Length: 193
Image (cartoon, rainbow, N blue to C red):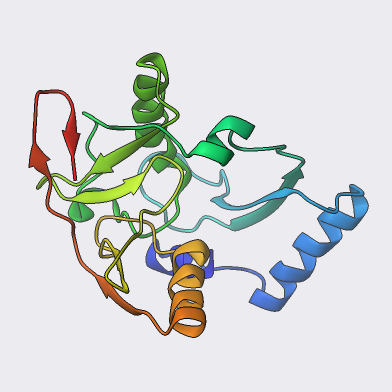
């Protein structure tokens, strides 16, 4: 969150330690031992329009029991994923590596299309046709002892991505390459990688 706020030129009024403590307090006050945490940073309403100058930065923390994110069948047998016809934003359009609430619209549209077609998830491509990410998660491919994942220009640079790479390096001694995965065309709108 701190890196995203910095990238978006949103000064944080709290230290990272204070933000972590606020999240712990939110869990404790709501008696949640397992929860989805959603810290959010937003500008105040001191002005209207597109100029984000002279606005105060506010922070809120929401937490709730999300329950299982995927069905027990998908957890056991794997997700069925559709390659989306909705492309992930280009890096020069909306800073994809930053976690921003506005990016969720792109993911919602892509996931809804996949669900209507009978799939569990969708894989989104960047504007050049390379794998970017799934609607709600990063994409990793382990092949011949090398962990592959898209570059952060087209996917979210977040805790999950960094944690998977660190765990792979620590546990498996795996080399990790951050590269795009080419997409091979098949019958539209389906593609595979």
